[in-house]
Image (cartoon, rainbow, N blue to C red):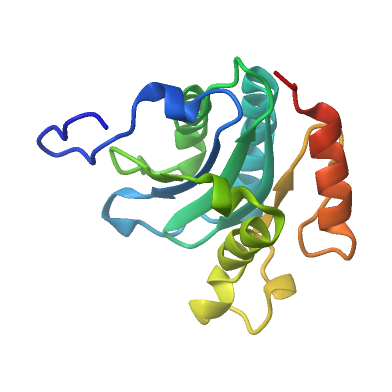
Amino acid sequence: MNPPRKGKLPRLSPDRYQGHAVVFWTLTLEERSRGWLTAPFHAAFREMMLHAAGREHLFCPTYCLMPDHLHLVWMGLRSESDLRNAMKFLRTHLEPALGDGRQWQHQPHDHVLRAEERQRDAFAKICGYILGNPVRAGLVEREPQWSYLGAVVPGYPTLHPLDGGFWELFWRLYYREIEVP
């Protein structure tokens, strides 16, 4: 682990975010700003996620946009995948869509999933936790009532983590696309 710098969270070495890494990210707005979460922002988010996925060879099985932050999981598909580069791209190109001079906090929070967290059942629980955020926050009674969550898998615009059969199809796509070393 890199030594912490003043005002920064400690980070793992860059190689932990490369290749077939799986990372749970949280981006929070400065001063927990609100008022940016709209259908047009959601569309811009999905577009930038698709570009990040294409540039860095990623799948996003789950994301959830909340009133003052967002969560997402990215999975690297190739040895050259770089999830930190993808995050830098996403933050840079998505920030203007926040409007009114809003900005992301300086550093996103991340959790690089360990091998045991990447097993199907454990992984589904992590993704379920993300999808459950709007219910826990009291914004809706059930996840399907929240419009600002989903998945981004290039070539599958209607793939949604709350749909029946999602995980079976997702894993089939993942194992078809992942580069085996």
